[in-house]
Length: 451
Image (cartoon, rainbow, N blue to C red; front, side, top):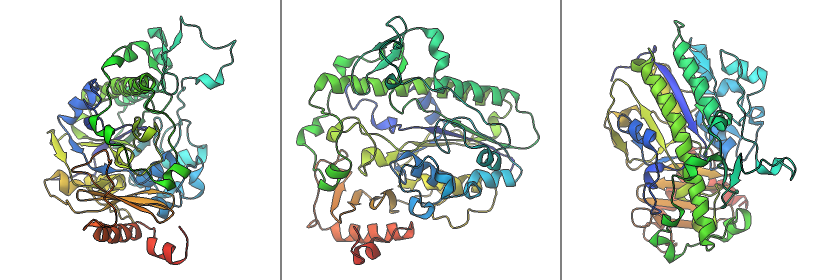
């Protein structure tokens, strides 16, 4: 496949977004993502892509630098992580240095707010942009809380807030992010190729949406999967440090919570579709590489969790989609890959030198048909880590305890296989080798008596 340094790049980041293809019918009520579906119909979807951290800051610092959390030093939530890893370490900086016009637009590098001026100016070629976030319930007092003519609360985790009037749609963060992207694509006429970020945040709590999106889902039709009846093998380490935060035996509450999340994903999908249509209607349609990803996923009630901060499959495995307009065909890659691979992939597409000190790999060969099924890909949660390798998921926690699961037979991970399983020793060794490659020496930590 010929690549050219003149290609444009659009990076679309979702926030806490599940790999939607796994959830289309898993709860009985169909998840509606028409725009993601039509994008996948002409793109490569990586169904075994993994974040390098199940937390916003370390994940974003990782996939925007091409370095693992233990290489960047950003291993926990840190809104000021640029004091650990300089902006010059991010691969968009290299695009700017190679003549690209780099433009920000929403939550990609870090949080909802624009980056500090000096950091922004190092990374981007245009002005900072600020998008208004919906005001959360906890910031109101009883006298200023909007009345039912403007906002209603439908129940479930985080309340199930919804706005009533369509004229308020423009107040949503994702609406404004999509507006900004449409404007950029319609007006960009410079000679330089561009790199543009589009950072959506609607799938991050509290999942407030216009009311009509919540009404798209029939709460009574939402059902727990049969597999949940087997229960889940818990981890004492996780229960102590990252415990459950809901009680899914409260069935109506759980159903409302799923409805809230699904409606938020469908709402974000609407605005993603607007950006996609703007790309394809623009003069840049045939020369713009599009990458869509999420920083990590979210438990949707299993293990009594409606949160991130775990190393199980339902949080570590993320949606990753790459669209090459010169080969607009549907393709699924089931090999394990890493979000850290995005930087190397973009650099190869653009014909630029590979990233220095990067253990991520270009995904171009797999987009061209090569298979790499036996790669081990890690996800780190501070001093704990899990890997996906082959059909297995192996987790070692900070207290030294482990879990092994066969994802081909047990996607929800209800049955922990234990240390007597014939593949346990090999997976433990693969886990140690993978972690060391990505900057975390498990064996040294154990020898030093550190968890």
